[in-house]
Image (cartoon, rainbow, N blue to C red):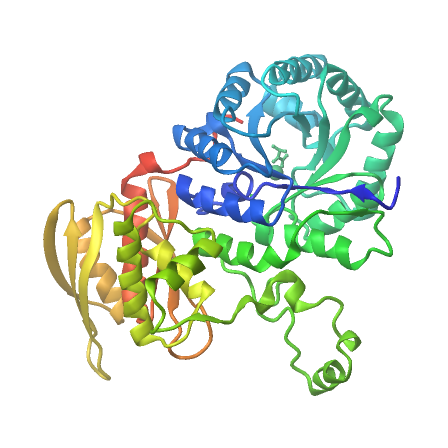
Length: 516
Ligand code: KIV
Ligand code: ZN
């Protein structure tokens, strides 16, 4: 192990992150996130699970087409049909990886797979060989490795490395391990698997006990050279190891870690905001690295110390993770060129002049209401502008609310609904409730409202409110977003965005595969 070792960062926000209920993303949203990850110089982007649905297949293909500086990976069970589908989806990639997995813990083999251990080894080897027919970059994961028997795990890993796996990933699928134990597992595996030098050892930790990052770092200290993680720690149940925490730990404690990542950490905040905006999973204020308070010093003693010498209380610089990005970029006098150029810097491009003009006119409307326009406002404006699909079934035409002390709030909403203009009026417990009821009268979506949240995109009372609405229909969950300086309008937009997504299921990726 040399101090120059590289730690590969494998981001699975678009696959495991998307498996958080309600975090499913459209193909275009996935491409936007993938581009941001590529700009951050993430090594491997797991773009999805191609067999899971036609939407997921198309998303992996679109990411494979859009990204050229990161390796694009597709997940596949250890089954021919999964691997073939992943191989097909990854065809356009400049650099591709197939990630195949099968469970190896006694409980998973017996209760879920109903297979004997010998059959599991045979299927794993077969899967790796088949994946190698599509790419020479193949990753194998023994699912639930954290609860598998060590001797059996060693046999499986030796066999798959022999079969051509170039990365072997050790998942703590249920987040059961403790850091010292997980680190020891990695050390033993590297020591005992005879051909361990022929593959990169990777880890994939879930956060059920809040130990995903701790376990991942312990594994790195014991020889793992790839960490699988997600932006903001998004992921199944309590989530996966947070990319920003892993990367900043390794960077900040170079006195301890014998390896380095290639990441441009100044892109962390952009990625964090993009993922939380698209998925509607807000970042808690006290979240490490990307939470609003992560670099805020409240107590007088701390403030005094930081003013005298930053290092008294700060172990990292806010700007190293991109916090300085919150600065005015445009205003009401900015022209179309400045607008286009700034969006280009944010990697947002328009398919046509018409789309640019439409966005620019929305920008001018916003600049009239809000004098200082930040990058966050521009990102919200684009997410909000319907550039994503352009074929909405439902659009907001206008909204009028009446809210007065002592009176029942009332909303009148006009919608563009399937080619026709419609109007309805309702009262409710508040203006947002009234507006949602009026929309439902016209749309009759039959959805249940699972979550409603509002956040100020920037500071100040003229800030845009970004609203997330989570709707559920027949077990499917989607998030909708809307932004506006008027939060009732933002709320109506978010509701409409969610209805459009849930009513047009073909456009959606469905990450969950019942029989995995
Ligand atoms: O948690 C897990 O075991 C997984 C595998 C597919 C790697 O996500
Ligand atoms: Zn996982």
